[in-house]
Image (cartoon, rainbow, N blue to C red; front, side, top):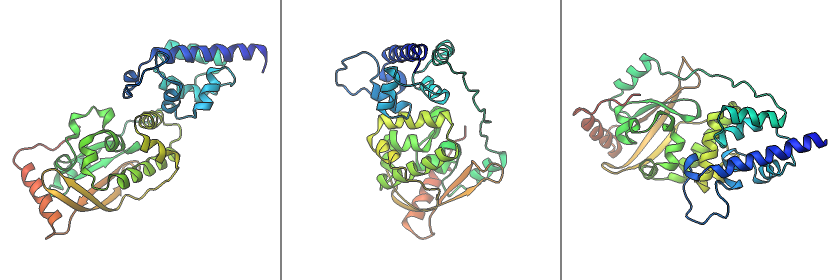
Length: 288
């Protein structure tokens, strides 16, 4: 490493360390552990987890022992919540040119898909997009899971809610199996879109907030199956063993409609009918 590059790497390390010291766990959506912090701001381990990289790799960056690539800088910019001027300065220190972000059109659910959701009055149904974002849902899904409308659009993600929302978490009778499957599905998404900054942010935040997520993500298990049996324990109608089927949208292969049904005459079918009757009393269909 030349002396010029060594100086730049050292300055970059000092810059990263200074930005880390300015951030609190709450500022990046992390829970306070309650244990005293020897240094202000985030720990190296927390930044590494937010950036989805090893602690050793991030430590070497801060110590000026590595040259950071443009893609690594982009991830660090998101993890450290850098503004435009700070990002420009960081790239200049590293001697890199900021990569132009690949703009993907925001996913939209078609009017015909919304009508289909509404007409499935006896079956909870929702549309999942990239990163397993919840794009739309019907009244049955809101009655079964939770009122998704209460969450900000950026937080309407199935995996996020499964790990962070106590109502959604308690709904799953076999939460561990459901959560492992969701993480494996998200792993498949990461393979399809490795440069997706929103996915990287989601993985980083959940890795810091939940030890189970961190462990299962590191296991690199993958799955793309969405069909099967789901066991729910609803607070109002009790146990529901439902068949889950998913179909890919013909308009957008990154959208899947998930529908939950039960065989007529079963307790689960009766439970869904009760939920549907409550919805028919005036609860509106929940759409963004």
